[in-house]
Every structure is written in structure tokens, then in C-alpha cells.
Length: 238
Image (tube, rainbow, N blue to C red; front, side, top):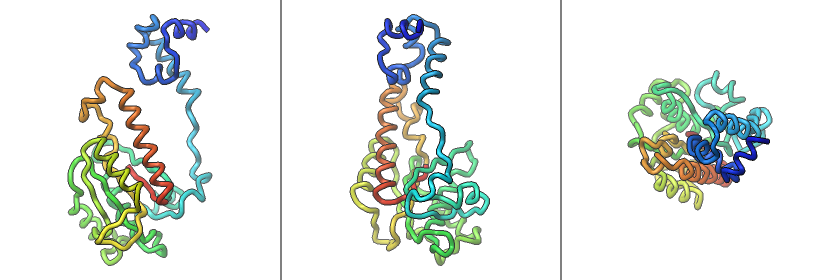
């Protein structure tokens, strides 16, 4: 109760005030220590935290599932990548995140009989053009991704170096199905490589001293991605 009273005197009125402002600012405003601010923040986050949903409970979400191209990974994911959902690929630098994303853009093209969806992919890059030579290498080396079934023709690509451009691209995708003259396959996958770049303060100065703006933009993009996944029954990977 003492902590609540102190916060009230400091005019921290909402959860957003606590979570979006720096701990140092909150401590100064409320005249409490940084450790007390962190303790309160941990309590609030614990109350708001939602346990992850087991994948077994997600069966039926979306319209399909396709292989990652790796049987062991498919087994961990309950069969592969499901449409209608957002998938985050995490790992250290050079761990193979982009390699897996490119592999997904190929494996989604496989026929249903080979654990694909006979679909096309839309690949959004944050750092440069799509590495087509790496995709060609995957086609040459992967025994389950033959070039007669998978190709660059069914991967559309766009370069987006900032939040505003990414928002425009996603809004265009939301407004109408992904189409293109080079592919007759329906869209089934969108890849954003690398999603974290768009909200990195070292790459975009507008977020350096404005965590509230960063949170606002991140929420807006998340809502867009969920709406796209729902409307077009797509899998989205970042």
C-alpha cells in the first residue's frame, strides 16, 4: 500500500505510465529508488503476463500447415508452419535465421502431397535486396526442394528500410490479395527479414529517447500483421 500511495503522489496513473517511461524518470517523479520501481514493474508485468498457448491447442487455427524443410523442426512445431499465425524466428547472429526464412519461402510452394501448400511467398527485406544466390544454393542442395516445384518466380520481394515504408507495404497487402505476373500460386507466406531492425534505436534515432513512440509503432505493426494473417489465411514469419 505504501508503494501505491507513493506512486499516486507521483501522479503515475496508468500501467502505460509505468511501463513506457524510463525507470529513472519514474523513480525521480515518485521519489522512490530504482530498485523499488523495478520491483513494482515486475509485479505489474507478472499480473499482465499471459502464459503461452500450447501448439496442441492451436490446431484448427488457419487453413493449412506446411513443412519447414526439416523433419526434426516440423516435429517440434506439431507438423510445421501453420497459416493464420505469426511466427518469430529468434537466434544469435549467423545462427541461420535468414536461411530458414528463405527455406520457408521455397517449402510453402511444394504440393500438398509433399507437405507444402502450393503457395507463393512475399519476402520483405530490411537491410538490402533478397539474396537470390542463397536461394539458388538451397534449391541445389536441399533434396526435398526440387527446382521443378520451387522457384524464385513464386517469391515476390520488397525492400523496406523504415517503419513508414513497412507500414505502407503491409497496408497494401491488407487491402488486396498478393498478386503478381510471375506466379499463379496463391499467397500463403509473408516473411519480414529482419523485423527487429524497424524498432532498433541505433538504426532509427526517433526511438532513442522515446520508448512510448516505439511501443505505439510496434503495436500498430502487430495489429496489421494479425489482420493480414486473418484476412488472407497467411503465415507470417519474422
